[in-house]
Image (cartoon, rainbow, N blue to C red; front, side, top):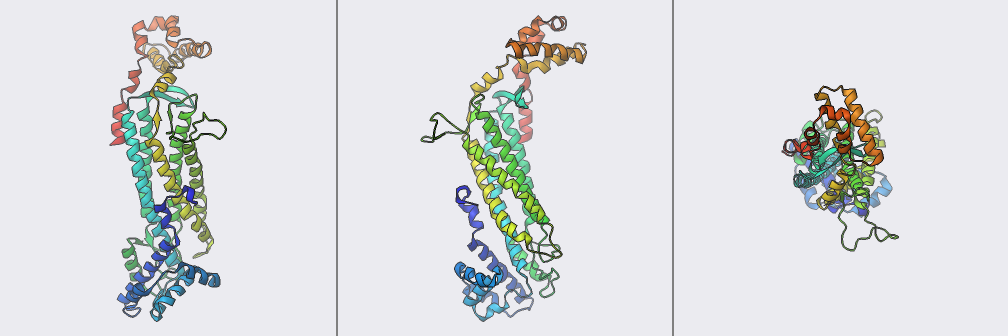
Length: 430
């Protein structure tokens, strides 16, 4: 996580002050529950809330000696609260604080990512509707296939990000658990009601069963969903990069006044934002592997997962937030060139209608193998000699025997390929 690729709202979730505030809330809520169930004297939680001060420098100084962050935190709080602080953390273990906090931070981060996806979905819907009838060429293997519309192309990404939103909502629900169950998850020194109380206060669910930690399969699911979202973003960014290539130039990133594309070549307008999204997606995706490796810990716990999560928690969420925001800006400001789409569509003089001709011949009784052969023969002449596909077909004896000039001409109607565009978009954009 570096400032260049961070947005303030998301980065603040992972700053030490927010973390320590959550730690303090957990300890105070736990104390309130313990007062309620007569584990500690009344009034402790109120006094801690009133007198406690979070001093990050002091916590860091204490940790240098204790080599333990939660003990350093509790020691610092004790210095400002006084004797009542001795009742904090009764029957709890460090992971009760650390894991519950981490899950809450992931939940907070997830909500921002949901907002990011909502903004992108809105932008994609607008673009899809705007260009629903803008004919362009569909490509497979990078080669011209058959006509589609640019709006239909955009709608595929809309559908994908709707699925991503649902996945992320499920992942947030999966991660929204609280564990206040003690040293090895048995509640031996505090009882399950404390956990229920804290969970309700934090708007989390009690973990069904913990060891000393919350099970890491939950976290692996969360980070794998982030990786999926990043991959979807990269798919869209890669499409923009391809469409901006000089030989294609059907769409391109907005190039602002004063922007420079190259230190050496003043003419350059490069898809730098989409390339940046591609690179950041690789980073987010890479965090899925260590998150799955974190599932495997020794017995009730070890701390091999801890160093991993201190890195991937902030890095994955902050980077994906930045990535999605940048992607939304790219699509919102995308420059579309319908004329270039038309020129590219017609570049190979009607080859894109080959399937319709072949199918029509089979409907006239020609064997599929023969129909394919005659259409391919004329298509290859168009490829190799830059001839017009329709004219080649019109002169072919087998074609003339089975298709009238009018029937053949009808097979080159571009509108035939738009017949179900509205149907598809209604189904996707509802």
